Length: 105
Image 1 (tube, rainbow, N blue to C red):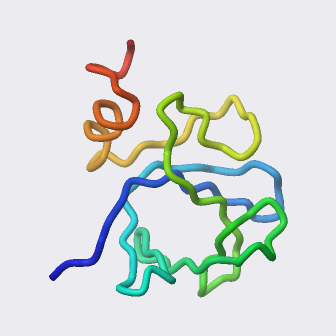
Image 2 (image 1 turned 90 degrees about the vertical axis):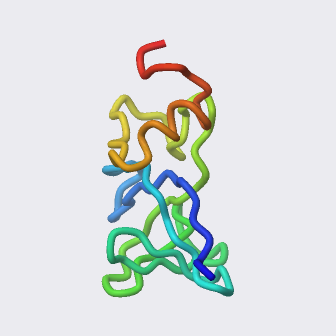
């Protein structure tokens, strides 16, 4: 039986209010206490973070991770920098989450 996965918005905080962001598929541990994305392991800050809700276990770097929104306003703070979308989730993101038939409408 596989682990649960979900498309998520992942933004590095790295000491700033905004940072580089991606939209990609994360995998949850069986207990859902840990998320995995591109070889990184994330755990909840359980409300202890400043403008972040997860940390990367190996480095301690903080992240804002949340489900992507239909309107595309995924970042915690407004930014004019668009999130990179992983190619393996692009079609699903645009059709199922953003409810668009193509990326330009």
